[in-house]
Length: 254
Length: 344
Image 1 (cartoon, rainbow over the protein chains, first blue to last red):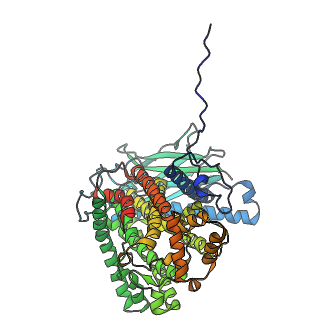
Image 2: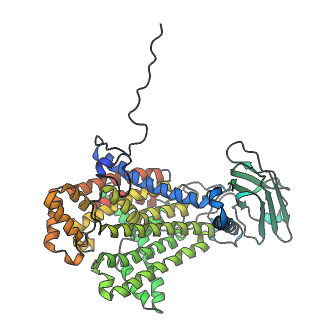
Image 3: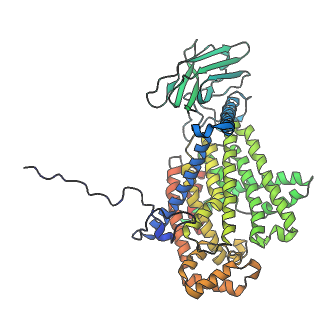
């Protein structure tokens, strides 16, 4: 004879306690009261839960703004002249963003290049905590942080880089380069999906004009390439050492 | 660390960073004042003192993540200029007569001149953000500019909300108050300084939501305590007109609580008092409202809410900054929730 199987009791809630109406006395102006009152909570819990609902709403507003700015456009949004204008604006924003990042990598030497913390790319080793923090108790300001152990990204040398993208989808390209890379013979491997099993982007080429200090990167995104982030490594053909990264964010087809 | 320890540390750091920022600000304005007198007036509020909490929090957050002061100073300077611009305009909008222990700017020089000085301070605040391009690089400077744009927009929306409430004929809730405070006070007092400090310190390599939460709870506790000090503080240290918020008809947490507690004729009397223009409010009515707040526990209610929010700020501090190595800057930021409640 089998015993009846014990089951967990159904919890009275499965979400964080964010009930606030018990404290707040009524719905906010122009909004419906999202949750019933929960007067059983201690006062301070009600206060904090209510306050979390306020700040979470605010963060969601920020996310919606960001999504409006960056997400690919839906077909209904792109119809007609207004849609074209909007697409143009989005492309201009993407282009200016890529241009800014590129300029950052190639601008003349400034204090910026000496500060490595949080720089993107796998070739920058973040310094150990403490190497840049002021000594506790000190009332004096520390000197600028020491340079990282590894070679920093960005170039102090003259030169330029161009990126040519052939794609039917919205695409954003970020290039991280090591110092002096324009003098190297480079190879760019396939761009591999950062997440998931999407096929790699293989239509990539890089050419370096070592005399003119010019790097040309050409990317062809196949039609129907799944949206997502793809990373590729720039490798020095001579030393076989990685010298930079190319990151492509592919949006869904417009 | 006990309450005295928190207060001492916060005071020391505010003096250190505040001194650096204020000197830079006054030097810049002095240089400009030789050309146009408007900048001499623009230097008035900064030279009166002030805590420079916003600028100091920005610098401390950046330094807690390992950035040198030089990387945060321009952003802090911009924040201080914008803060003073807001003060000049707020004093006009609220009809305030005192600021930092002296007559408000519009009282001294008239409303048109004061508005122009406020405009000048706001525009000057853009300059340091542009200088960031040479110090931090274009991408990071651009990100900070984006943050500044949203902060400014939220701040004016918060102020608009509070101004609208003065014409509102329905009771408000504590939830409304927190929503307004988030935008009007927290965004530029604690959220933005925390976010841009972390942005600079990590070179835009961290999720900033946690700094928004920390800044919100800290800023809301700060504002409620500020409102309380307007009713029960020491005037010589407070630096503004006592009971000025009641004279201006501000919907503070205490007023909202009191309105909820009153009924019948008393509720109607409070509504009628709030509907008046500032010039029509009289001292007798202000005393009556203040007395009712004591009777109905409105001050205690606000204190309890401020304590609960400060507790949440301590919790969010541990999430946002807890993993960082110990430093004076980290301890300063961690001490702020305790300090906002202890200040008089």
